[in-house]
Length: 115
Image (cartoon, rainbow, N blue to C red; front, side, top):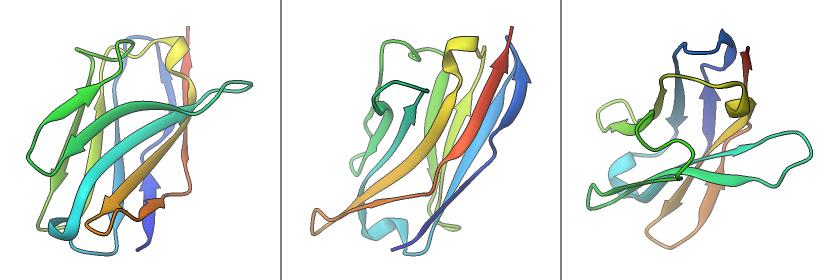
């Protein structure tokens, strides 16, 4: 399975970005879709999770501002990010876990939020 993340860039605080993660395999064969981020000098952290049953989980720092979703037809996982803050600056990674519990990562896309 290959993942291609895109959509990062430079945005002012309060702005929005939508990240995309194109998955080479049908999302219907995927159990879990996730977005992580890693800021400079920090550990990678889970930002959002979309489980196969449709339930979503968000970190406290992004709850109410970020939304994870997917397009089953095009095999794309999205992360809509609103009301961005400078502390959201990080490299964002998508990850999927298939039905065999194998995990696959995308290459990361940089999000920079200026104050």
